[in-house]
Image (cartoon, rainbow, N blue to C red):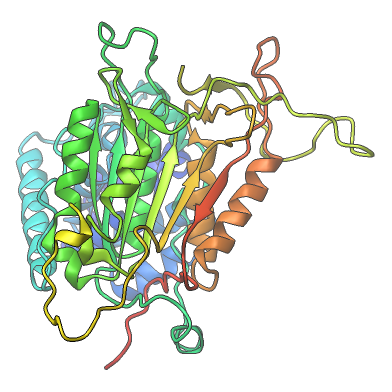
Length: 466
């Protein structure tokens, strides 16, 4: 019977920590896929887990299955926890019962199990690379995930938000919807859909930029974006804590990727402190947003001509706090569930004519210099004021939270412009909660600009059959 189930020592470790695991465990597609790769979960088991409506229910169903999935299930689960940056839960399971403060004499996990976990993780990573290598596109050369962030008490508190939309899988597009909308919208059926670049500045040089505080919660944002765009079938590269010049170099390299020719779109996310028209590098120098948009225009990035280019900017556009106004005939105080329990406060104090013409006898169709772009901004630019963007130290910024939720729930049948309208509506309802500070009952308003020429549907998880 030992070969059929989990050894008693590991079974008791799961049982002993089940209450904490149900609260803190993030059961997402990456964790489930890791367990499937080790043949711990079958496809039907994975589907039944992800079909649960809340994170706690998904965790509970997984914990019920694991003890029945063989003697290797425990080490595979620990490996999956490490891969999904839940090391604190792996440590919790592998610590001795005495350190846990419980009256029990179960032997501690033997240390020789650890190399097995690491070996299995390396083998699984190689298998995943081989799967992607089977496509016509290589892995991003600039991907930076080696330096995983340390699990602090603060980041563990983020995991306590058990019903956070971060755990809701991206809902799939149906074949009927695809066929009824693909003709009037941008082509969006390549796999991957495109490349996504995330630049996230969290820590700033205290000598070069003494006025720029660390963006606590910013590391949550880039992880949220990595997960959601990966599920939307983008190859995502994340770069943290770049100077302004390093940001320019990173964007230039991204624009020049020859693989843009074979995909249908691209995504660029910039997360930092900012002012109107620019975002800060970690050295306190500014990167102008107009230069960023110019780098992707029809002249400078011809491989993305006529393809949708999506930008999302999580940064302040000024230092003006939006204190809000009382709504006429409105309630004395908002009852919106978006009120926060303690926010960190504001963020942030080649020429086309030079190309050779292949056919001189027939004039080419001309394109405007800049088209097919859409950009969502976390904060508002007005004629007289530019406002600050709000960020929660545990759950990340308001804008990225709402963008993540809306992409996961709505992209199956809603084009991106309407998704961003709904993000605006959700941001409008949010209100800061920090009694005794200037941030109490503060407001934020996001906005977006668009030069899209068609509807932009992401058609998640749908691949046409040719």
